[in-house]
Image 1 (cartoon, rainbow, N blue to C red):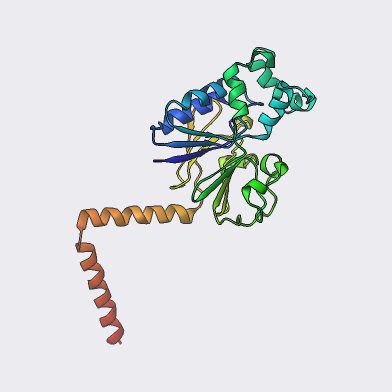
Image 2 (cartoon, rainbow, N blue to C red):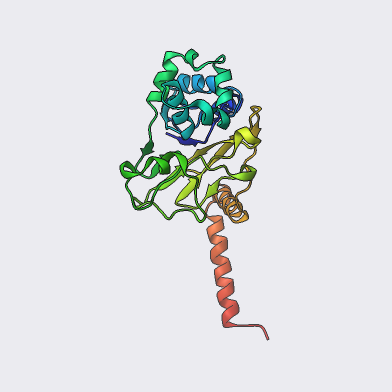
Length: 264
């Protein structure tokens, strides 16, 4: 089973379609969406349609983002649409044919069923952030949905679990990886990419808003060198077997002899 976290989609339906095709999920795989499916990008309706349809292919966990809160507030009444429309809501209205009255019943149900966070044995998934000394049920809504990550980032959560978030846009298609905290909102609608990350391996898939797969940037030379070293070691063991161990032992004996009888 693979478990992918997927960052803020924001109406970028072409990016999402290619991302799902590239992941090629099996029924055993799990895709965790970090929220903000709608607003800003060109086709929020198709994004929601894709996520709903995906539930027939694999395990899907859908979290709530602050943009879904605004949409629901307007659609169900009680919230003025002024702030929402000024923050990307107009693109969503257009994708639904000019009126939220045209939201299909299954889309209303989708928005109602979104989760505030999701926990596994090793990870916490949440849209925006967390307070380190509070359990997830005790977190405030401003923290879960609205506040951007501070600088420096918060310390590890009290549970010891690694936290995966979106919401705070990261530049240059690079995720923010602090070890205990990872932010994978890579600003798709604004010219960046939509990011999916395998939370066990750290492997990433990125697509741009035009639906093209992007090569993720190198996170660090040290990480790259480490991966290359492991690949070389694996190849040598498969190709030469015990010969590499014999060579290492020979080199050790050579160094021992050189230490005992140095040249003049």
